[in-house]
Image (cartoon, rainbow, N blue to C red; front, top):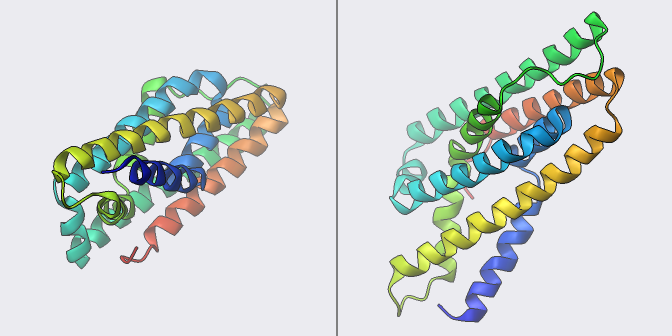
Length: 210
């Protein structure tokens, strides 16, 4: 793989990562509602989640999902339902905070739960797994060993994903700090939950083609 191919891959990946998908919507929602305490578990979850999805792709699960309508539908439905569940839960939290008239104290969700929720969203997105299967080979030089090149591309993608998630977390957390009032928290819980639910529906309705 030439340097030019690697740079092209890095540039294309950066552009694709900036566009908010289910993972980034999850990161934004949790960052806004939990502030800086969510940064480490969220970024770690994105890194491990993307690594897991890439590993599945490299091991051939992407081919199975692409070929099997049943497998894709099951994984897609599970991932979409999970996002909707998280979104509804966040909306209910916002409504509960409004009813109780509580202050700007963040909802009591542990860092472990933040990590597990975000990891689940990132690692179980079937469209992402199939996308990796279709995207990475485009930058591989067939005249050279493919395994090493795929590994380099995977590491590059995960590194960029970490940077992207960290930036989204930083700016979302800053917004949460500026708007740390009971009313603002309520609004962001409800709007964040709505975003997650919408992302879940989008995932559930995704087509099998990339």
